[in-house]
Each structure stands twice: as structure tokens, then as C-alpha cells.
Amino acid sequence: MAVPSWRDEDPAAKGEELENILISNTLIGDPQVIATDGWWGAERTIVMSEVSLACWFVNSGFQRRNCPFGGQLVDVVTTGGSPVKFMNMAGRPLGLAISTIATTGFLLFGYDQGVMSGIISAPQFNTFFPETHRNSVYQGFVTAIYEIGCLAGALFILWCGDSLGRRRSMMLGGLIMILGVIIQITCFKGHKATAQFIIGRTITGIGNGINTSTIPTYQAECSRTTNRGLLICIEGGVIAFGTLIAYWIDYGSAKSSMDDFTWRFPIAFQIVFGLVLGIGAFFLPESPRWLLSRDRHEEGLSVIAALYDLPEDHPITQLQKTIILESIAASGHKGGKTPYSALFTGGKTQHFRRMLLGSSSQLMQQVGGCNAVIYYFPILFETTMDSTHDEAMLLGGVNMIVYSIFATVSWFIIERAGRRNLFLIGSVGQCLSMVLVFACMIPGTPAAAKGAAVGLFTYIAFFGATWLPLPWLYPAEINPIRTRARANAISTSVNWSSNFLIVMVTPIMVANIDYGTYIFFATMNACFIPIIYFLYPETKKRSLEEIDLIFAKGFVENMSYVRASKELPYLTDAEVENVARQYGFGDEEEGATGIEKSGNESSSGSDLRNREKTADAATEQEHSATQ
Image (cartoon, rainbow, N blue to C red; front, side, top):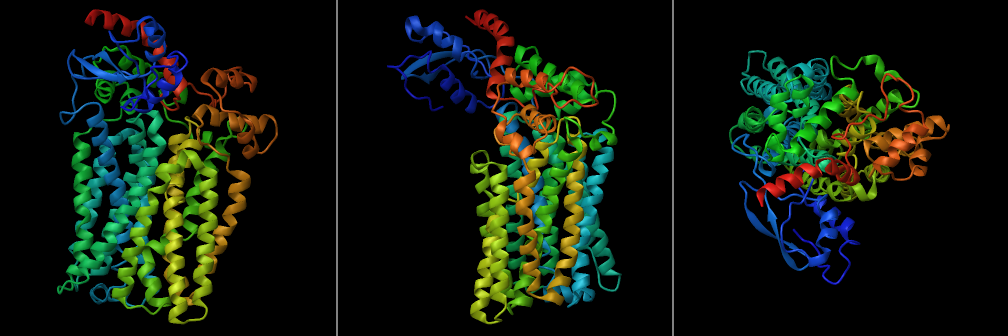
């Protein structure tokens, strides 16, 4: 852990800075330090009063180890780890396992999105399924039926997800995807092969819809608050890597001398990801929030202990359980589900407006043309730029490399640039890229076609860095806790239904209006700019309670919510509570107050400090007992 040397400076003055450093380097959310000897003499008490709020060092057993601080070595007494293990892991290794399996689900999502792009126009595939040969309607239907399955899977989770639980939903999603793949690769000529392939692709989509509706929720509920936004952006980036893998497997399989291998192997390869997801989820813990919401308190406490790598009776473990239970009670989940009518309320909480903001981001992601490029990149090159299938596949693979590289950009700038700025930058970049493609297609010369290729490359770069992850992140932030689950399910359903529309009509548009397709998508992206600028409030570095106050401020003071987000200063937790009272929260019984005390949903650095004070006396007693 890198901690700067403050030997010649006042340690008390540096306490807050040190605290932030330690919190940022701590695996879990509520930190503390248990120290013994080695501090700076008389200043030790002052330093300890600040640092004891910051970080604990967890190790199995009661041991001593050295920690660098201020150029000196400080002895740290470590507490015992959790007796509860999953796959013989707890704490950081368990968190890594959860993230790995969760991202595998989104890797599979990206792979299945990209795999048909290199298959749908392959001569071997068109020969085996003659209905797809030079038939843009059939090509669009075979590709887009997958989105209908995804929509059905998302709706299934909307209705049954809370009953199944996160873990079983992921196992079910992986199993259904494997079943769909098996149906696709066992097609035989003369036995209604095309119908069987369509059915299999639909079933695969159902499994993916279940996964994409469940995995972000599961990861968020098993992760600490401070890295949830980053993890969701990483999931979005992994979609691009899955598409990249699919493109290059398509390209390699096309070189095979076995005609059926050209399309059977790329589709069958999905089973690998499905097995990792399904089997991995079997060994992972269930979400502690889901367990506690079902009154399975002992199991929920055990999972919390394993995630934090602390004993079940540790004050921090008990505190986290209490926080989650309070959040469940505040959200209205306890004893029943949030009614659908809550999604359509206005007032200070603005549930309906916030649901529309989240859902519209998913809609704009699709109608901006992303999947027209991802699914049909080779076809676009073959039909509008007169490339051979092999050349189109090679260029598609290179395009996906660019896509994957730029998909990681948001991981590093999401909290610096903010959501609004990235939305706007992406819209402008995508619009100009489509205009470039359109302009270069008009002359119809090989030299101009190269400029069009550059436009498609720049489009996918802008999309990967901005519009790829943001529509998965923004709905989770903008919706209040009471309606978040249902509103997110609706936004996911909007994504898949609009995805189906675009994937279905793109080959028809290319066949009938040729390069006019690109000016259509350029126009769509241009329309996004005023919508985002005037309607989308910024949420970066805001706790979820502060986001609630943005909408309360806009409603009460009759101003735009974008302006309210700019005028509302960044608040501490105590200030949030005071401002909430000013806007009337807590003074009346509302169906769903926007200021719901859910510490596990929106913790900040100051919230971590406040919580830790609650457990400070208990940890001091524990420390004394280990001396």
C-alpha cells in the first residue's frame, strides 16, 4: 500500500488525506485500524483518532505484521478471518471470483451479439440455410429473433426474479443458453433446419435476457458501494471483448475445409462461457440482500461474513447486516413487492421521469446504430463497399479490436468526465462518423470507400468509450431504491425490443436505401444531443440520496433538473439529511420517499467514517483483548 511520508508534517492535519488513501486501498467498505506500537510518540493518540476510522488489515489468525506509515513501521494486530468459505475463499479472493463469473456472463452476452455477424453472410451458412441467401428480410429475422428471446428473458426476471434469487437465476440463464446452442448446432438438412435454428437462437436469447437482468444486480449486491459504478462499466467493456472473440473465431472458422464447421463451431463455442457461468454460480454465495429480504437471516449473515472475511459476531459484520435490513425496510421490499403503480408517480421523487431517463438511454443506445455496425459490419462492407467476404471479415475483426480497446476508456474517466459529458461526446462523435461514411459512399469509388471504412472505425471507437457502458450504469443510478429493480428491468426490456427493431430493419435498409442508412443513424445521433443536454442531470460523485435531492430541488423550486444538479452542492451525509428536511422528506408519509436510509446502496467516504464510529468501542475492546 503506497502511503506518502509525512514524517516532518503534522499528522493530525493529514488525517483526512490518509483516511481517503486507506479507504481507496481497502477491499471492503467499513474500515478501521487496530494498531499497537510504533507511532510517533506523543502524537500517536492524535493520529490514531483519525486513522482508526480508515482501514483494517485482515489476516487469518491473530498475528502481527508491519505496515508502512510516515517512513516508519507500525505494528498491526490482525483479527481472525471468516469461518465461512465459498470455494474455500473469503474476502478479496471471493470478491474476485464473483466478479470473474459475473463478467463471464457479459462476455457471453458480447460473444452472442457478434457471432452471427460473420456467419449470416457466409456462403457455407447460406447454402445450409438457403432461405438466408441474398434475402435481407430473412437474414434480419434470423439474427434479430435472438433479441425477442432476450426480451422474454428480461420479462421473466421482472416477474419471477425475486422468487428465484440471483444465484439460481444465473444458473438457469446459463443452462438455457447451453440448451439453445445445442438446438442450433444439431440442425440437419431436410429436417426444417432453418426453423430449428431460429428456435434455438430464440432459446439462447431467453437465457441471455435472464443473465443481463440478473448479473448487474448480483454484482452490485455483493460488492462495496465505492466500486459499483466501475464494475458496471467493466461489464459493459467486457461485452466488447466478447464480440471481439466472436469475430476472430468466425474469421478462423471460415478458413476450414469443412463447410459445416464454418458456422457450427463458432456457435458451439458459446457453451464454454455458459458452463463457466452456470457451474461457477453454483459454487458462489447467494446475494446477502436477497437472503435477508427472504428472512433467511443466518444465511445472509454468513455470506456477509464471507464477503468481509470477518467472524459472524464481529461488530462490522453485524453492522452491515443491520444496514441491509434497514435498507430493505425503507425500500418497501419487506413483506411484498413494489407495485407497478409506483413507477408512474411524480412529485418530489419523480419516479416516472427517472424511469424514462433510464429507459431512454437504452433506447438511444440502440437507435444510434451500434448493433447495425456490430452485427452487420461484414455485410455493410460486402454490399456497400464491394469487398469480398474474406476482406469484410478481416476488417470486421480489426474493427472489433478497436472496439475493445476503446471500451476500456470509460473505466478510467467515468468519474472525471461525468455521465453527461460522455453521453454528449459519444453522440457528437457517432453522428460525425456516420456523416463521414455517408459522404464517402456517394462517389462510389474504391478510394472513397476507404474513407467510409474509417468512419465505421471511428464510430465504434466513440461508441465503445461512451454509449456502450453508460446505458447500463445510468438507470442504476438515476432510479430511486424503491423502484430501481422494476425500472431497471423495464429499461433492459426497452434495450432488447429496440435492439430487435434495429437488427431486423438494418439489412432491409441497406438493401433499399444503401448509403442512406448511414445518414439515418447520423440524424438519430444528432437528435440525442439536445435531449441529453436539456434533460439528463449529472450524477457523477453523487450519493444516491443526493440524486434524490436533485429531483426534489427541481420539483419544489420549479427549475430544470439539469440546473438543479448544477446548483446543488456536493453534500455530506449530515447535510443530505438537513436538505431533505427542507424539501419536506420525513415530514409526511409518502409511498416512496426518495431519501431512504440505505447505507449499503450509497455510501460515501464520510458515511464510512460515521458508521465506523458506531463500531469503534467494540473494536477497541477487541484490540485490548488481543494485547
